[in-house]
Image (cartoon, rainbow, N blue to C red):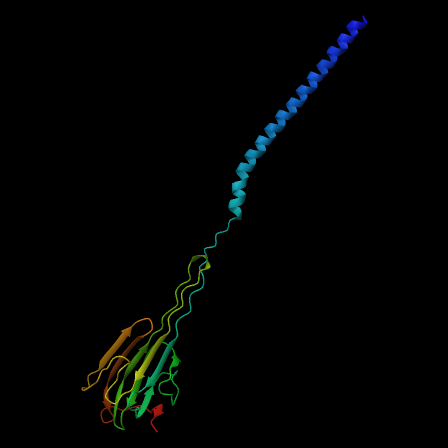
Amino acid sequence: MMLKLKVMKRASNNFTKRKGASSMSYKLNNKIKDMKHLKLILAIIAPLFFTSCIVIDNTPGPNGRDGNAYFGVDYEHSAPYSYWDDNHSIPFNPILGEYYHTHPGVYEFEYFINPYDYYYGTYQVYINWGGVGGPHGEPGYDGVDTYLMLIADPNGYHEHGDSFKMSTNEPIVIEQKTEKYNYKITIQKGNVNTRSAHAPKYLKN
């Protein structure tokens, strides 16, 4: 009887162990399933999270600086008797050969070669605009500065590098369009007997 009891106890212990192992296996399987579900959820949420954190800024950068324009009056052999224009950027008694910062526009001018004869016309000043800003904040390019020096010569108008001697009263148009030299000038001869003149800004001493 004692032997039989011991066998039954041993059998009971084995059953308890099998039951505990089964329970542990069940829990382990549940944990594996939970981890698989968690991975699936993370796989769905993660891309949404990262895309929501990526900010693409397509705001254009600032425009480039507009170029400046400069104008002046000069001579080569003999200074003009007098000079006038309606450009407010050019002062009275301007320094001949000096560039003055000016605004774009069309301006009238006159310069006398003696008390009676003169040349008159218009000059047009342009500026080079700055470039438009690019994507991702990239600034636009700056405009190139422009220069115009009007050479007041007794034999007629000419600009550095070119000569236009005038023998008739027909108007002459001089135009150049480059980044640095961008202007248009119309000029012709006049006389106080046929056309009234303006009070000069500059008068030769």
